[in-house]
Image 1 (cartoon, rainbow, N blue to C red):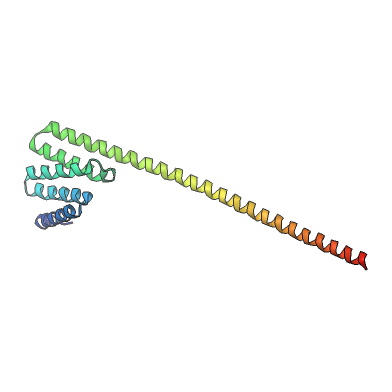
Image 2: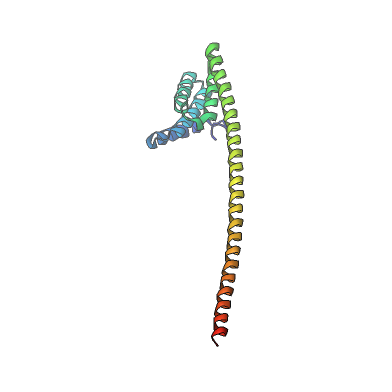
Length: 168
């Protein structure tokens, strides 16, 4: 928030506090985000070397975590800009390509998640239809059982009446 509002000194202080808390509690995603915002602040302070180091730390933390793919994309993009500013166009191109690949991976994973959720929805619909069918069959079975029990009672009653009238 402070970095977005261009209050870099305060942003730097809070990013450092956040990093200390994340390290003490061993929360890797918070560490990665803290390093990212430290890099943003360092870049604004014209400390490109420190910004690059912060981004590399953030990248190291986000590389194996699929959930942090959007952050990883931003880290790659910012590394590309830093290397472009320093004149290392080969590295800049490499990181911009990685950012593009991350965007495509994120898009593809979003599509895959959408497909999975459609499949899950269809499975749930099928299960609901099967449950409705089973419930209907149960009602029909209960109705047939009630009919049979009524007939059985009538047969027993008619047998008892027949025995009663024959015995008189």
